Amino acid sequence: MKITLLSIYPDIASFGVRTISSVLKREGHSVDLIFLTKEFWEKFEEKTLDDVVNLTEKSDLVGISLMSNFWDNAIQLTQKIKQHYDIPVLWGGTHPTVRPDECLEHADMVCISESEQPLVELTRKMTKGENYFDIKGMGFKSNGKIINNGHGPLPGSKDSMFKHLNEIPHQDYDWNDHYILKGHDIVKMDTETLNDQNRTYMTMPTRGCPFACTFCVNSEFLKMYPHQKPIRMRTVDNIIEELKIVKNSMPFVKNILFNDDAFFLMPLKTIKDFSKKYKEHIKMPLMITGATPSTLSKTKLSVLVEAGLIEMRMGIQTLAEKSKKLYKRPHSNKQIMEAVKIINKYKSEVKIRYDFILESPWDTEDNTIETLRFIAEMPTPYNLNLFSLVFFPGTDLYTRAKKEGIIKNDIEDIYRKHYGDESLKKSYLTSLFYLFHDYGSVGASLPISLMYFLTNKKKWLLPVKKLIVTILKIYHKFLRRKFRTKAKILKIKGKIFASKKYGFETGF
Image (cartoon, rainbow, N blue to C red; front, side, top):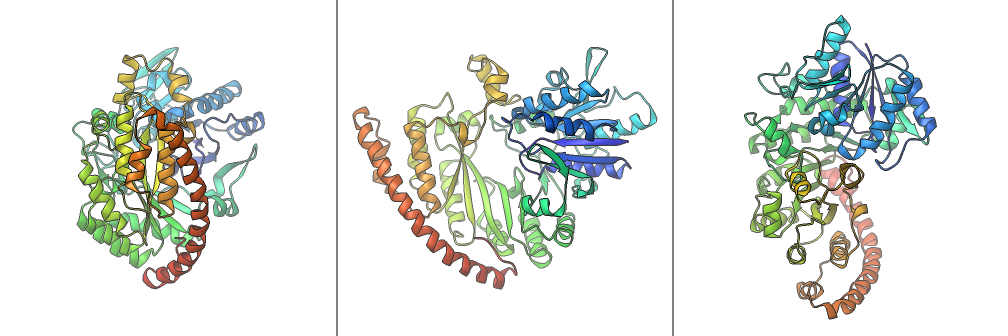
């Protein structure tokens, strides 16, 4: 079969699409990957759509991966393809998983949950001309009727054809049959493009998350698979094997990123084994997401720093007790501060980013102030990732917001809303989060007494507080210039340090 997979995300990492491509190629199919690197609010130009039509002309199946906020982009592509061909268009990803029937109003097929096994079964049956409308983990539109077969077994479970994650082939980086959007044109991928865009190689040693945070679709996965272990792990040797291939065949890659939801849930013994082999065989700067205050430990972190960890990201979300209960965040503020202090001990080696969610309709001014005052006590340096709360379908918060009338229209209020800081309302209290980010990123801290004054609720003080914030922003520009000069010196020292300790050069 000839299959074309479309990635409609802003970068070319696309772990899911690349993994599916490898699985299908192992089945003997010809697979093209097209990376349509647009932000979700940007519509595709007609020239781009015409190129998609030309590239999919001989395809037997077209697949599109999407999250909820790429809804419009997926519809635009599907409609354009359907205008020209009678090719089945399949949607996969988080949105079709939680909203399969809605997606089947536009797509011919959907994958529900992780897609490796359903797509293997689908393509085998399509090749043989057999009926495929009974495949678990898929939904179909047939003669105007919707067939929803529910979710199938997860890879890495005993009921799956993939009993262990090791059985899934590594990501497809064979750029000979890959294409990418440049301007409005879709062009053939080449090493120059990869060199420009792919200096960081992203992969996932684990899948799953044990936390049922009410803002995250992982909570829906936990409901779908109540008897499945929430974390599935690849073996250390399998991870190292993948990274050896990357190191030997992709010289433009300078960093490795593990983009897991809960990486630090790995047992200490496994992390020690990984770190030893990573330092011995890979020797590249390592970045890790998926840290939580309750799973991070000093021993785990020290071992990873020794292996070459240079950057990590930890979800805090809120420090207000009421908001933590709302989000089902199980970490106490004491745990959070202990984790922050552990990370800060490695501030000269590891750059840290902390995630925070703002603009919850259930947050009071007191809740926000509670978070701000806690941040004032956190040791610097740090960077803050600020996110606007979005009620993604399948989450508990979506159900509550819908029930309370906060969501009037899913498409306008959710699918077209950005969760990044671009969509945050620039209120006075929000500006203080940015102030923390600005000062924390250059290693400067603001006096706690000053922050208590800036978060004083007396309205008549607001003009004075705004003036102080303005002065602080001006002073930060001076600090930033000073920091850049210092950073150049530290970078030179860092390269010397890294070359001696890890055998590589780091940008930090």
